[in-house]
Image (tube, rainbow, N blue to C red; front, side, top):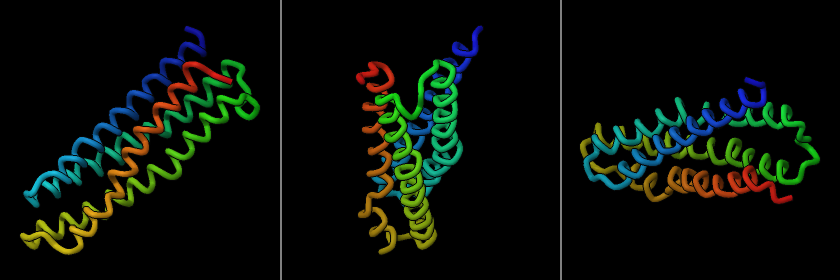
Length: 158
């Protein structure tokens, strides 16, 4: 197995791990927004935060590392190849903007849900955190940014 084949496999596995983490965030996050049971709401946000920390963030970092190594192995210039620079820019938006803001929104709604579950009633803080929709917005932003990244990597348009 050549180094190119090895890093293609590792990059592919990293992509699956990242998508596993994204699904692990979105499904319980949506469940947490939809349920009325405060204990279940708190548990759902806890599950989403856990998936973010254990799969989405490390998977995204692993995608970037294996992608840069694979590009170098393929002989691509990561500074002058147009489609690759665009791909890198979108990736950096996901890594440096979307994922940290998603984490911030998740932590806020998780803490407020725990406080509401402890109080046994819907609190004003939880209502405000749910209205903010920060976690939903940035998790969906990641989903919608994946399509142009895949397009650029597969078709290499310029």
